[in-house]
Structures are given as structure tokens and as C-alpha cells.
Length: 180
Image 1 (cartoon, rainbow, N blue to C red):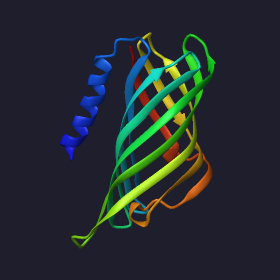
Image 2 (image 1 turned 135 degrees about the vertical axis):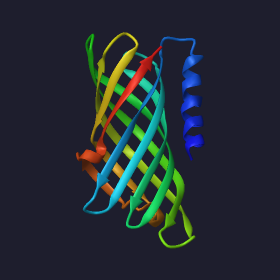
Image 3 (image 1 turned 90 degrees about the vertical axis):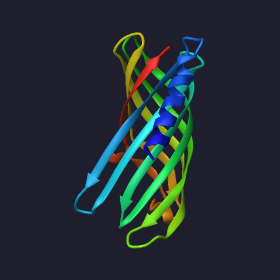
Image 4 (image 1 turned 135 degrees about the horizontal axis):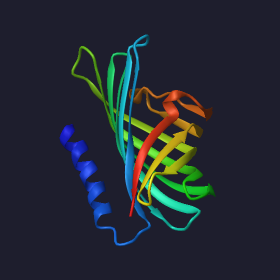
């Protein structure tokens, strides 16, 4: 599992290293969530690559890994979430944006006490607002705050179908970008 994650990170980093334009960026985010009351654990590593088409429009994709321990089941998902970003406010250091995203996740679920595994699948469509702060010309800190849209998955994914406006700690992410 560690080798797969390392290969994904290296592939995205190498794409950025060969970028011949100053409109590319690479980065990503990681997350960890533990709820001891419900005995749930979640870990995410989400490398990202993007292309700035203009000052207002950006296209990118998050390619990541998501591990969940829920209800005595271990869920391992590989995700791809392409997005189009619209920046509606920008100055020298700060920008505010919204990402329109469609994503899928595929993986497997293994259950405690047995050798059974099931195919796990998740999906989402919606908008994720965010902010970015430029530390320098090449480095930015990015945060996404919430999600408006629809998320769901099959029974093995342990993700219930849900829609609307989500503004909880599970939908808050922090990341770093390197801009070429």
C-alpha cells in the first residue's frame, strides 16, 4: 500500500517538474480524523495537479487515497476528482474561489473476523468553496471549506447518500501548492 501511494505522489511531482509553463501547479493535502466514541478513523492523502487557464479559470484533478475504519470494516479507496475552479476575488496575497467537481472512488472493503472483501464505490458532484494565501510567488496555502452538492456510495463504501450543504470538520481541508 505504501508503494502505491509513493508511486502516485512521485508521478504527480514528476509531471510538475517537467512543466514548461508558469501556469502549472502541483500540491495536495493530507487529513486525519479519529472519533473514539464511534470507533471510526479516516486518513486521506490527496495529491493534486492543475493548470491555470486564465486569472479566473483553472482546471485540475485530485488523485488520492482514502482509508476509513467504520463499523468494524476497513474501506480502502482510490479517488479521482477532476475540477474546474472559478476565482471570484484575487489580490496580491489572497484569493477566494469555488471548485466545481465530479469525482469517483473505487476500492475494496474488508470486514473484521473474515476474509470477505467487497467492491467499494463512491461518487460526488457539487461545489467546494475555498481560499488561498500566497506565501511567495511559488508557494500557496489552500483551504477548502465545506461542500454543496451530492455525495454517496454503495453499501460496501460505508458512505450514505447525502445531499445539500455540508459545513462540518470532515469537509475542511488544508493543502500546499507549488506554482511553476
